[in-house]
Image 1: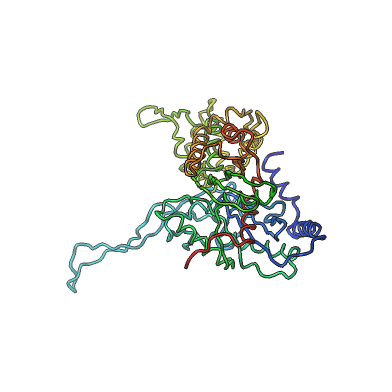
Image 2: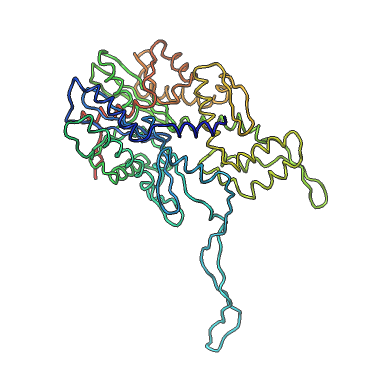
Length: 510
């Protein structure tokens, strides 16, 4: 069975939304049966670069909200079709794949306006005579066959200029308009779960909202601008009472809640997710704590996945191979212009743009050489025509996850006739730069706290990228026997719910 068929089968046999919700409610009712329901609730929402999660806290227990049928974690994805109908989460990704598989992209020139020229003759009225009207065309950028747009990693755009607009067919959308549908979906899922937890369910119009220490982006005041945009989007999703809380502190808070027995302790929380690396140092005494220092950089699992694609697969798709073709008076031989394909290959949400004649025609010509390298170009051609980039990235994520527990793992992509073993050593060599930047970030947060590694009693690592063995080894070498794993994918959402319950976090001024 192919990877694509496996994904389809997995989706086909998932629980329906109503069944999943009923199952979650049953679990919650069982856990609360002896304690009774609560009237006060804290809501935490972790809108992430790659994935999102939400949690409720009733003063004693954390309740994760199932945002997808089978899991509490939802891809942060929005799909808008030509009728401006919207899908979110995994449904958005599935729709994107379906609508672009095998579709040839044909770009037409955009009409910018009309222009008229004169004939150079003066007419009877004493005015220049006009020639025929001509349309003025821009670059070929209109994809008339496109059925919809997929937006993934929108969080990265929050730190750019606040007035930024993104064209979706004929309409210009602000970033908040692309985020709001995801938040509305989260709110609906919270509403479904609330009756199992609170005695008298109310509309969830409040939440504690997570944010990185530093947003990605190019804006001068990017953090302030990003928070204002987030606040606006949450407002449209009817979360009118908002508190904002740094994500690494939320992760630390959820650990403090889960381990109340610890007394005096200086804790380093390392939150290494899909888009950012965030760290904080806090000093706790029981359930009370004081934040000493924070630090954040734009580095995450998405960047690692791109490095894997580039180093492991580009050579199998034709990078570095030569290309012979007939010229006017002689045969021309050059390197194949693989660099023209790289950026679109590394960004699967727009990789369908490779299915244009200007990209596929050179590949078809190169394949006709029928040498050993032509097999590589056939792979690249198939990847483009069948829109396999998302599938490839899923296979790379699976490989990365397996290498977290095994010394070697098989990268198997039958759709492209790719199958070979990858060792953990090979993986670590290709992410050397990432590991160096990670070490630098740890050094920086210690300097900001005016502390040494010996001053830290415990390191709590969270986020999907914190599962990489090389990351664990760096922390273990610096903080021997003091590093623990803490709920990699849901700790931030849980900590945000706890923070809101206790009235923590910052409210933005008008």
